[in-house]
Length: 305
Image 1 (cartoon, rainbow, N blue to C red):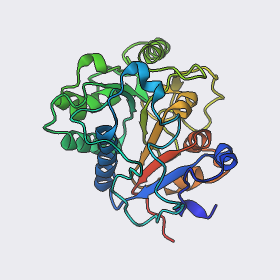
Image 2 (tube, rainbow, N blue to C red; image 1 turned 90 degrees about the vertical axis):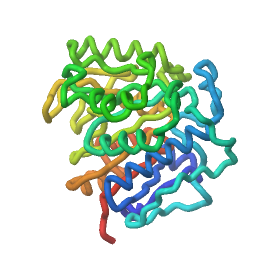
Image 3 (cartoon, one colour; image 1 turned 135 degrees about the vertical axis):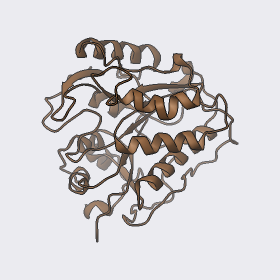
Image 4 (cartoon, rainbow, N blue to C red; image 1 turned 120 degrees about the horizontal axis):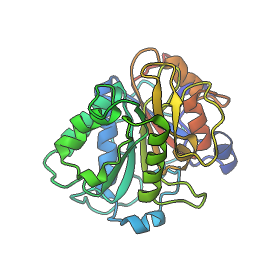
C-alpha cells in the first residue's frame, strides 16, 4: 500500500476488503472546511433518503459497513492535499425531503465535534422538525454530570440538539453521572431497545461519527485496550487521559454500523493516521478499519509527498 495517499473503494476484491477493510480519505485545508463538508455530505444523504420507518430499517439497501453508494467510477486514489468537499451520491436518488429519515446516529466529542455540530446546526437552520425522526446516541461519554464542561452530551446539546429542538425522546444520552458499569448497562439496554438488531445479534446503528486522538484512539477505545467480549455493546473503561472514567461503544458495534465517518483534525495526529492506514496497523482506528468493509475519513492532517 503506497502510503496514506491511497483511498481504497469497494470495487476491490472481497478477499482484500475482508482482510484489511476499505476506506476513502477526503482531505481539507482546515477544520472548518472539513466540518462543513462532512455536515453537507451527511445532510445530502439524509435529505435524499426515502422515508423509512424503524421497523423496516433493516431492509435499506445499505448493508452494514457499506457506503451510502459506491464511490464514483473506479477511482482508488484521493490526493492528500486536494480538498474534495462535495457530496458524492453516484446512484439515482429521489428528490430532497424536508425532514431526515428515521435513522440512528452516534455522536462523539472532541475539538472537531464542536466545528461539526455548528456546521450541522447552520446547514439545517430554518427546517423545523428536520431531526424529529433521528435517534441520537453517543460513541462515548465521560463519567461526569450532563451539564459538565467535559460531557460529550453537553457539547452536542449546546451546539446542535438544543438549538434544533430535537425531541427529548430521540436523545439517548449515556448517564455519565452514574456508576460507570451501571451507565454502560443502561446505555446498552437503550441501544438494544431502539436500534434494529442485525443477524449477528448486534444493534446496527445507521451512522457513527468518530474523531481520532494523537495516539490513534477512537471513541474511548485506547491503545492497549484488553481483548473485547464479542457481545459487548457499551462498556466502562479507564482512559489514560482525564477524566479517566468513561463509557464507550465496543469495536463490535462500530464494525456492525452501516456507516462510520471519522473526522480527524489538529496537530500531532499525522503519525497515528499513517499507522492506522497501513495493512498491519494496530491503533484503535486501525482495528475499526480492519473490521469494516467501508469507512470514510475526513481530515485536515496533511502529509507532504
